[in-house]
Length: 314
Image (cartoon, rainbow, N blue to C red; front, side):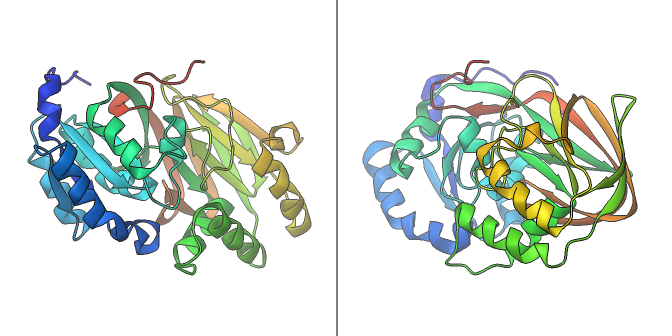
């Protein structure tokens, strides 16, 4: 991908600040007025836009100058919905994590910051390049920034999306996980990583990670990096309800990779097929289901602001 034109730092003063009022079950809307006052006092040249829907927001982004700064206020779902426009215009993006997931923000060192502190970094911080994943089904491509959940964890994502609005973050995903166990099903999955067979048999899930965590902070692939030109396949093999339940504490603490039925593989291209349609979710957004698809990495495709101006050391 061609590098975008260099943008003088002064142009970031006229950044677009896009608030998703539906993020975190609608709780993000509460900061709309404080956000407006903060910008008037500290970044008068910035333009605040409150998204009415994803399509209109993407249209606004597509009208931005190539390489200019955009600040997204929301979570992983907000970034996912805007990602096609960000990539098309090669925009530099800063994140203010006020969503339910925020795993991309965690990878950038932004987790735990107040929204105003994160906003200052998003407006004025230096951008670095990170990788993006792309789901390919037929001729259609769907980019994702943090993760592509496939199987059980995608079903959990779908259930979490329909969960109670007052329950957010990791507790929402844990509630959805326990609820989904009652409907557990295992399917036979065949995964080919960069031309080599990586798994052929029953699997609870076979998900792809760009960030170290997903599901609002679960350290699924702790060694994953967003700037290494690779994605990481995480496969959980044959598990029953009790086995899956027993695995949950290990997933929460990042110790699941020592289990004999859990494996990872870094890849550039993945081919995956199943004997039945697998549920899919990208960056916490349900996508439906597919029986056969491919996944590839787009190295360095996204310009994104981190807390330090650089990505965490390897």
